[in-house]
Amino acid sequence: MNDRVKNEIRDLGGAGARMRIVLSALLVLAGLALAPGAASGADRTIEFGESFDGRELRAHRIGPRDAERSVLVIGSIHGNETEGHEIVRRLRDEHPNRFAIWLVESVNPDGVAARTRGNAHGVDLNRNFPVDWRASEPTSAEYSGPAPLSEPESRAVKQLAQRVDPGIVISYHQPWNQVLGACKGADRVQRRYAKLSGMEFACRGGNLPGTATKWLNRKPGRRAFVVELGAGELSKQNAARHTRAVMKIARGPEGRARAGSRGGGRVHRPKIKNDQIPYGDGRKRQMAAYSDRHYGDRTWRLKRIEQIVLHYTVTSTYGPVWNTFASNAPNNGESPGVCAQFVVDKDGTIYSLVDQGVRCRHAIGLNHRSLGIEMVQEASGSAEQAILNRRKQRLAAQRLVAWLCQRHNVKVTDVIGHAMANDSRFFRDDQGWRNDHSDWPKNPTEEFRKGVRKIRDR
Image (cartoon, rainbow, N blue to C red):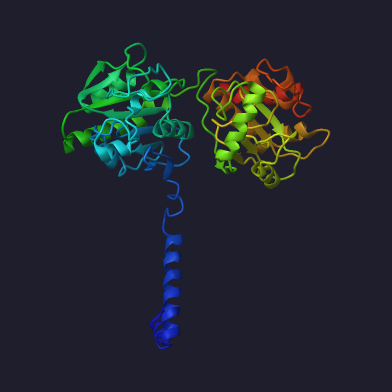
């Protein structure tokens, strides 16, 4: 803006003052729009839950959003063991370009505020996970909680792990001053971290019940481990050494060697656009009640994924599909309404509408064991062939399915079409309902599977 224009605005008096405010705001907005990385950094910090006392749990990402591999670093899970926070803070200043690191200062902010081991409910979060969980007394310093995943912080860690799908998880504790390994399998990454950080490697902690690392290591190919820092304050020199160790582990062969348990090399996560439909407490209660009636299991959670079911939308565009799923209108006289976890548009865009750990009504008899994938396609006599002939959509759907098969250890033969659902070995409906859909019968489904196998085995 040149001086003559500025002077003319100033001479307008009160109106000029108001105009100056408007122009200043516009200049600020323009600066934000033009600032390098302003838009790309908008999703670097995500909220993934709340603590027992309502404090936000946040994860910050360094590195590219579409990185092929990621590492999760947790500064503390016990509120009185906080020296790992310094490593997390230092990592925020790093700039990886081929991998992503998700940083969580603490998953127990209530314990940090109170300087207690447990959360505000008195629960040791590192005894609250489902693997080898064991009940303990509420008076114990290692109180396991009333049930596995009873605490909001533990459930939030589960949701975060499902969302970012890390290949390596490093969790900092105190005060043993050791890198821990189970010594019953491959401890290469733990041993290398110990060497890089100048710490001792020890076979410890493998028999502890309900730990986060045991649960995280259920995922094939994932390496989750504990780094026990020493007692007292972490020196700047040691903090810098740990920061370098994390970066070297993330960029090294350990960070790359996360392969599925079936097939050949690792299938990379395809680009997925998050477009979640409303799925609040009311709909969850409806889903739990539906599950109780049809599967004898009163829950809205999708705990076991055994199959992937293919559908097409009977629409020519994506918008009506989202609107239908979001409306939650009763179907067959029962609530909740229908939905699917994913929709693949004709241009190959993959949309995530519901989290993978949440049940959707997409196929009678299988909603308790399967994920649903809808492909945008209007009804026609050759709808499946139209999708198979549409290269971008077909490849996107096959990449998504290959990645999901790897992630959930699903056999390609357990990728089925909706028309095949009644004959599934996992089919169950206590109300005697049956599917009457004809989308994706056996022959086009087998053709689709061939593409999935190619992607998996290459």
